[in-house]
Length: 222
Image (cartoon, rainbow, N blue to C red; front, side, top):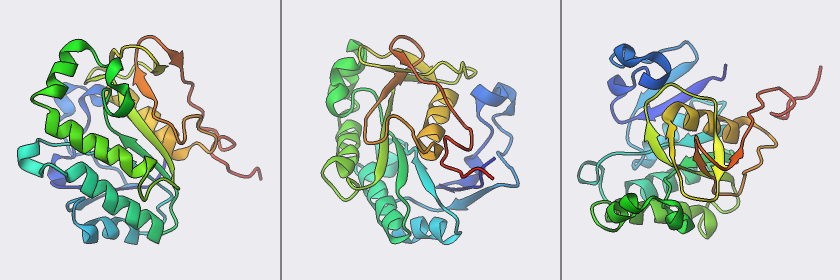
């Protein structure tokens, strides 16, 4: 597997995911010899820089979240901006960013009840998500190899391995399958959605088949 350096506000909350490990495992710390979790805030440039200072960073997955009242109204945009700065300073080009169905030009793909939330209770969150995405369309991240991942309704069910890129209304998708798609975006040399904003769901659309071979990741044959 890959060596991973993660940044988390509270490392003790980085536990085994329910979808992949079962509900009873969610209180167990997620640990591996190839995983290092650093404590810090993505809105603090020094904390982000500390991740890259570990060395060997070749790609980035951004999956930020939290209640606006706890993290602020611009955490997604500010934090992603800090990540872009660190990537450029360290010569890293590939990044996958998880936003949401309904963000940007995908509003029509959100179910009606979710649109109501976007226009009301989640209005500030979606303003932040839209500004976060804009960093890659017209901002400092436009020259990076980015993939903005817009998942449908997230659930904690076991991964299905079914990941569809959709153009119509989004359904639900396990978090573990979203993570799988993000790994493809981060690692596969010929990933087909670089520079794009795929909406993904477990139902409908065009199936995406992962390829973790060395050739797909641009490795030279021995």
